[in-house]
Length: 229
Image (tube, rainbow, N blue to C red; front, top):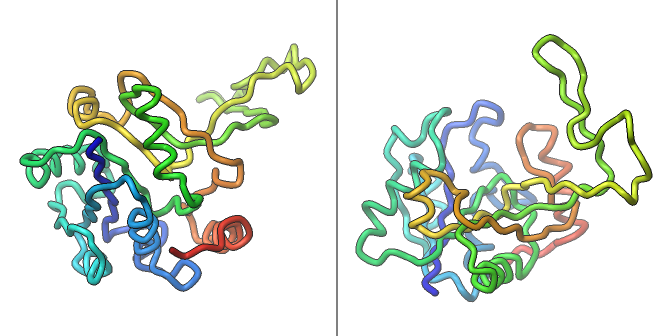
């Protein structure tokens, strides 16, 4: 199977300015994703897509294909799917892969072997799309309605029952998304067709969305992975 990896890393970020360029345990955040992708034995090509020349320069010295992303696909409201579809129609139109692995640099908690193991599972299950995520076995979720009323989401608070009888939920963690080009284009979405789940550990559920997340995710990485490719 021809597998290509796509790393999307735009320059603008309101929550954490220059987020993808900031050091994560001494390595620029997006560069860590590059190194993780290069560690895969099953990925054919790696594409780094960004509107920022500074981010693209991080791929210098690596076997990575740099793609300057059009500004229209690098706004706060732009969808990742549209950037990948544009890539497929232009840069990947001649040698289209059979499978794309999408990386989000802000979800760096990928174990050694996660990428290749996910690809193998994707093939074995004959999936059309896949996401990585962990089981939440003891999380009771509530949501506030528009009129301010709290409602239980993943269980019935009136009939709680013992923990062992509750079915676990799965949290999508952003570390890996796999999909065929046909699935992406047909659905205009990274999800479609037969959707599979690649299981991660619970500690892999955390992403970097705010400044407070940064030292916490670094601590998790040092504790459970501590490998810098």
